[in-house]
Image 1 (spheres, rainbow, N blue to C red):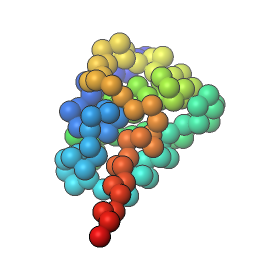
Image 2: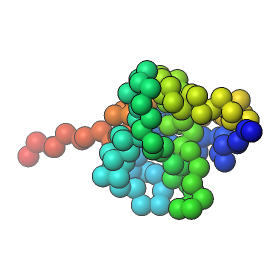
Image 3: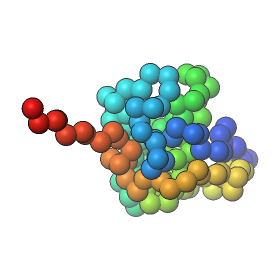
Length: 119
């Protein structure tokens, strides 16, 4: 029996988009919580499942949907094998749409540190 992704289009302020400044992510962006999402990233090619997924920030608690940028990173450059296996029964994976260039690594989704101005 198949299942469907709740969300198939990447949101406008997805942190996986190269053009997104994480501080512009709506609903109270937290760099600490963002960094904690590193636990959702599988070791490329590993058969071990992290047991965690990154949820889209546009969905309320209890109504979570996969972050489309995270999902496509993990099945592409992230080579998350357990996720790939789960997606074999996904009925709408072919409808997923990314919006522009994407980051290659989770670390690149985090805010860049601005140098301290010389006084």
